[in-house]
Image 1 (cartoon, helix red, strand yellow):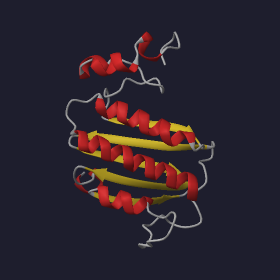
Image 2 (cartoon, rainbow, N blue to C red):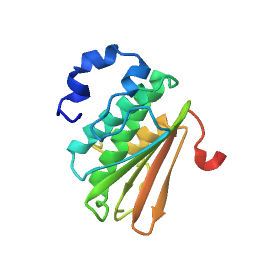
Image 3 (tube, rainbow, N blue to C red):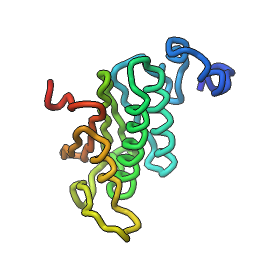
Image 4 (cartoon, rainbow, N blue to C red):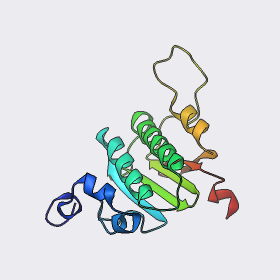
Length: 173
C-alpha cells in the first residue's frame, strides 16, 4: 500500500499489469518493498492460514516485476511457496515472535525459496504415495517441481527450501 492507502498510488491492478517491467518495479508492495528491485527478499507473515495467499501474492508480484524469469518458473514458485507455507502452518510451530519467515533469492533462471518456522515434532519429509489419503502430498509436489530441495534444522526452528529452474546456490557457492 502507498501512503494514501490505495494500491500502487491509486492504480488498479489492471493498470499495473499494463505497465512494463521497469514501471512495475517502481510500485511499492504490501510489505513496503519495490517488486523486482533486489535479488533477495525476506518477509515475515502472521501465523495464520490467510498468510498463504499473502505470500503467494507477494512472491508472484516480485517475480513478475523481473524481465528475466520464465513464466513457468514464476508459476512453480507460486505453487512451491504455497505448499511450504501450508506445511509449516499445519505441522510446525511459529517462530518466537509468532510469525513465519519466507525468504527467496533470484539468480535467473534460478529461484530459491525458503520457509522458516519454529519446528515441529518431526523433520519434514515427502510422504509415501497413498492414493486415498486426503493430505500428505505437499512435499511430493515440491519435490516434483524443484530442481532440488532440502531441510535445514536450526536451534530455534527449521528451514525447508527448494530451488526452481536449476541447482541451488547451496551447492554452487
